[in-house]
Image 1 (cartoon, protein in one colour):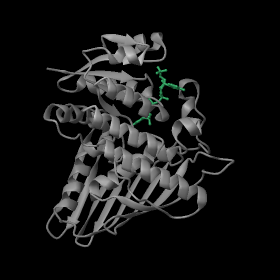
Image 2 (cartoon, rainbow, N blue to C red; image 1 turned 90 degrees about the vertical axis):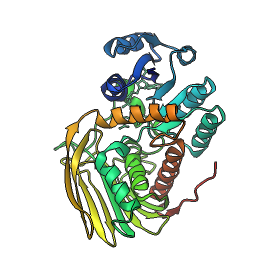
Image 3 (cartoon, protein in one colour; image 1 turned 135 degrees about the horizontal axis):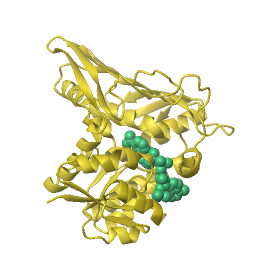
Length: 346
Ligand SMILES: NC(=O)c1ccc[n+]([C@@H]2O[C@H](COP(=O)([O-])OP(=O)(O)OC[C@H]3O[C@@H](n4cnc5c(N)ncnc54)[C@H](OP(=O)(O)O)[C@@H]3O)[C@@H](O)[C@H]2O)c1
């Protein structure tokens, strides 16, 4: 039987990627979409062959054909909508960042747990085959003790001195409250935080961030560099930004016994190449580009997690840990100090 999906919000991400991925995924059906505006919901539903268009979340959540919701609204709305969905017995796959506050993250994890529904987060980089290989090489000890992990996700346009302000329905991206007190860190930085945690199997316990924002005059940064310490002592660096034309979005993992390098894998589309250099494994792989590959894999993984009653690839706790790191990075950038992270218990 197909898994019935309802999408919350009609922005660029669900329009370009999530709805097409659901339509391309096995055993998935896009049942409905919910917007604040009925006309927008109807147009989106027509574009993506969804059966229903709702202008009320309550109404969509009472649709018995819907098994789970995909939350693609502005960042600060994820928690409230997720809790509403959990109460209605719907599984929740939320976009990143999972929430903009730790209180919201805790409430979201607890609500989904208490109502017996799965909670996943849209960290699609976990589905790139190169990243999965990196994870295996670290876990099985091929690279030896990991000393350094580096990840970058940026983009930009040549000749653009400043990133242009958003317009219309995308205005929330420039509203510190709605986006969560950081811009490029909330946009792509959170993906790299999660990727480094995923590959190393370790938590980030200390962060020092230098950004071009987090000041009274310029609250939202457009470029950020983070120095990280992991729970097993490894160090890391993370770069994200919107003023990086021709960027190479790579992942590099250095261990005592070898190195894993990926080129251009840190991107929404599934693509890129990897190289492994070590005593036991020496390998080069290239992945053909598929625009929706990571999102189809994410959709199918979440559905299997529900069917098999297991956790999805990126869980609510992964989302919560990344919220902790992001808030620490914002504090570090604001104060000029290194910030230690004590992981909260749920
Ligand atoms: N995983 C990824 O790679 C990835 C990539 C891009 C974005 N994202 C995440 O996906 C989410 C949506 O991003 P997007 O690029 O689709 O955003 P977007 O294009 O700006 O669209 C957001 C939508 O939210 C609704 N909205 C806008 N302002 C609102 C407000 N003030 N109050 C309530 N609803 C409002 C609107 O839809 P309606 O009014 O029709 O509901 C709007 O179309 C974000 O959390 C973002 O971080 C993830």
